Image 1 (cartoon, rainbow, N blue to C red):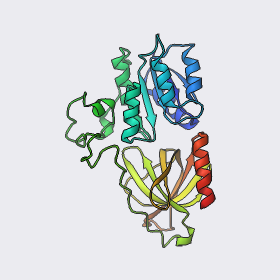
Image 2: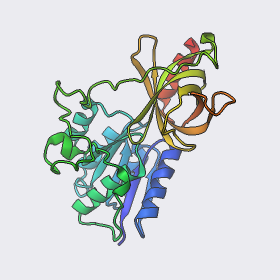
Image 3: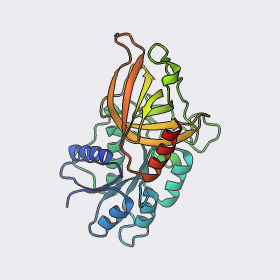
Image 4: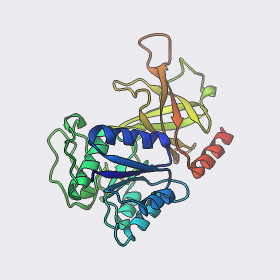
Length: 298
């Protein structure tokens, strides 16, 4: 029997992206998917799988509730389970470990990050695919695995990689529980007047790329904003997480999406401002309610 993987996420875009990566890199893999934990659990009762990749924040049944149910199953309680979430803070990761997660992947993630964790869990389960994942393109990215979090794995990273940190140390500037540093908001005076700004947000992409942005327009479907030009810009269809902020700078919501469009902020090649539109992909009622309240106050 070939390798069988279950992908659980309320966002169709993310499920499709994960399924494509798995099918491209694992010969003969069978990939099943479900939009929430309840329907994933129903599928597990009718078929065996070798690995579960599940989002945390979903309607009907969350990833945490699904993990608890899976670990309580008499015959399938040891299925490798990788939790995926837009939240990489210490409390979430600790809770996932306590519930019995096999590994943890923070959104947004690159294909290399995803496949690294998938191949690792399949190998531990004795189901190594015949095709190896190329890791040369990871460029020394440090992966937030459960081994690192528990201090039980892997040895020191290569010289090109950042030095691992202890996420449970209050003295660590890079601790996962710490609020990430937000770059300065872009200077948009030449493009927009201050009255055009509707709020502030932070855009997160794979490979630890983070950009502060100024919101121009927002709906339940998308957000249009301005950001500072950078050497490595996001690309169309790239996965993104939007951290929307209140007036006092505290995080309001983490919304999953993708880059719908990106263009120069001015009609000249040396512009320092970029216009970017993020289309949201979440189907979580709680996030819709939070966004609705925020939009009503804009």
